[in-house]
Image (cartoon, rainbow, N blue to C red; front, side, top):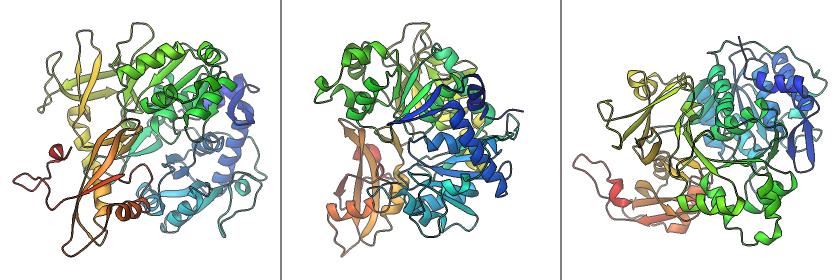
Length: 514
């Protein structure tokens, strides 16, 4: 019997006065975060939320995220974190698919009115019974008529709660991911999956009293959620939160808060390395404090790794994982020399193989699909037994990524089986975009691919065939897409074609388009 919330509770008991979270000029102690999470749990139980019920959460990197996240867990419920860039239609799908009983959504900003999108999506789902708007000021009235606030839920609730004990294999979190063959799928991760993955930090880097994480990775994503929030709270660190990454703010906060650990995707490193006015910052101070840098999400260009390491006198360690692997599966550890370009070795308790199409091991140095087995593997895709069976063939999780082993057992990612695009660290799934684009009255057929981009790694490009007699220009169609999907998804480039290259069976040859 164990609950993922123990990561917060244990630290709150041991170091109650230590700062757990910093956001701008707000600092919250471990005791304060734990007490607020207890109020959330009391509120949820009072509403009738039962162990195993699903509760969704849309929130950027603000102190509200860990408070609500652990509050849901304490009540024995399952957290369903949602991408903060989703629009109403997309939110409704996730609430419906996950069987969410309640939904917490941050109010957002004029530029990104998350609360409005969330309220719109919530109203489309009959089974989701409760909505709570997270206002920037918890005491403020709701700006959306009819929508109760997080502050109202917490008001008068005691800051003590007897956490619901869950079994190790009970679902703790459902993280939504997708392939190129269908709608987003919810990866069910157990309390054991998540706790053990957070505790892998013990084997990946040493615990140092007073560590400060700069949390620029979105907490709704598996990388930031496990490697920084859960592992950081387990290690009794301080988390300095960025609501949205930009290199100027990141470097400012690194200097201000004496940041010792940074984790990011390659584009974040690239942006900080190429800041146009580096003289604004005390780079020597930042370098003295920064003891560990971790990269994941997509392959780190070796030149960026080298240049950043020289400028900030820190070694960047790469790892590899997926939402379905909780996420860490491999890592370049500190106890042996790292290999630039490699994602390292399998982590403790995890096995990795490289196989051919028949699931036979390939020879060292040869390329094949990466398959993984261990304590980190998801329970399955929620309510999708066929997709689960396809991914978990022969007892191994099939990643869809192509890689190889070197002579020392280090793993290199060389390609992807899937057509997934990684834009600035976000996974973009072409079929989802194609399906939406083909609902436009002028579009007959769309094929979406990733094209190289200097700062984002890949950019989203669509090739479109229009219906006979229809006319729409590139700017108009891009604007239409922008209104239908999250900002990281919509294509920035559209090329109109009379025909698309296809196989004899009618499958579009995307490799030719690329």
